[in-house]
Length: 418
Picture (spheres, rainbow, N blue to C red):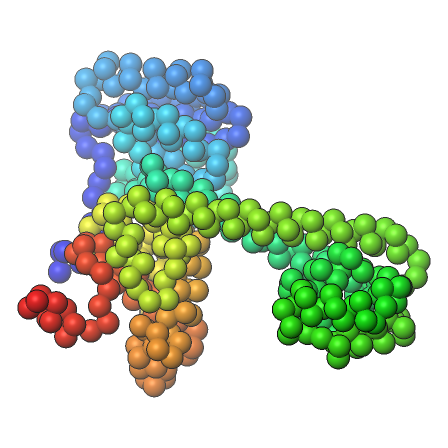
């Protein structure tokens, strides 16, 4: 049983100097505590190279003066502001841990029975949490995983920007030529973009003429659209109820949206090419890609978020990293339902959920498992979450055993015999 449980040990002992930092954009608040409970008043240092050197110098001098052997630096899980300090300390051989901000918030109320929050109070609360044994592992991707993480996050941000641009484009088209959306159905298609780029207004479609419009549609859609669709557009342009005032500015805005969308598509394509190239440098990526329905973007995103699958000793640790670990709230005779904690990396959960959608289709590697969950009365959404958990477990096993995915064990027996 010990091999499948998440190991949570204390990271401080009688030879450890416990140092905590409350991260800020410009100024950080530092604090240290010795095993004999002597401590220093929280002190400030700047979030730059000089401030980092000052902080490290104070910590090392304290460790030497107190005749301690180890230094552990802890902080809350934060955003980009903590990254420079984390990398600086890691390069200088300092052990790093982090605490959940939810734990910090709850423990604050216990100190003086007050919800008071100050920069000088936070480092002490973080130190209390670490001493209680609730420190979390700091994941700092290095090398290729670090690049994969940055690329995946950049792709996600670009996709969000692309979605916003498409919504804005649709709004502008609805004002200028609302019938266009009924005829073309989707503004995301290449043909729709061509028409909006060259003929954004009904008047411009009328000026083009029916025959030239038919030729353009056939060429851009590769024969999928022809005279019938062109005639529909032409007739709609004649009786369009789109506004006639401010059309010049609307046309410019539509051109701007289309140009930005083109840039987004180009960047996403460039990122995906770089992801495919970098994945070849990760030795175990081929095992993950051997799973039918799991693509390079999903594998790259998971490796980037995890850092290194080999750094985890149990699947429980990996599930907790993703926030897919289960919890329930039960009391007395009431048995609570089980839910995922969502206290982990949101992008990991998103990637695994979309991977589950791909693998539960008919012919997919998880189709039978998914159908079994549904037959047992599980709702579709919960079944997909269960498949997400199973996919992560399978991936962990593939990396651990250095083997490609096999749909059933019989295939493995034949391969071993061969």
